[in-house]
Length: 203
Image (spheres, rainbow, N blue to C red):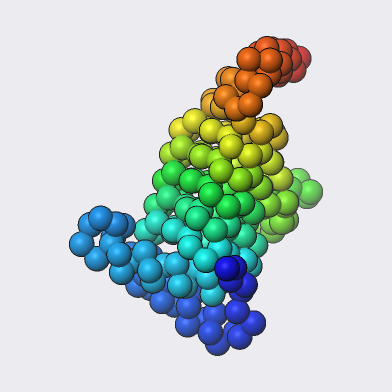
């Protein structure tokens, strides 16, 4: 079962007030009040997000904007204290605490005007494939695609696409190995890719 963003502006306004004013501050399970917090955050998010699964888990103090640029698949979760401006997440994805998703940039066309006064521009939402796991404090830059069943190490900054079944880490994130089907054959390709990425960064 999937849920789509409510078309009723009043309903969305109430859900946003409840989410940011109350539900997002409740503790996470298994702390006292954690079950209530999880249920309320899920209900509010399913009203606000562009599209969401039947069961989703939003941790405490997660910033979702107005939710209009976020798709969160069934059985997927976003860890506490994350900041998400725009993101497309498939089913079965685990995201650790303090995820940072950047989906806009400052305009700096006029050298005579302070950059903070020149406004911002929206950029493409990152995407995360089925069954992946992102560790704590991962940063996703605009438009990057993380494939299916990927593992992204804690503290990584993802600046380019990550192929299916990849284990990647670092700043910028590089593929360390391939762990899925045919991993023996593809690990050699992963090593070659990492070497080529290092060469590109040195140029």
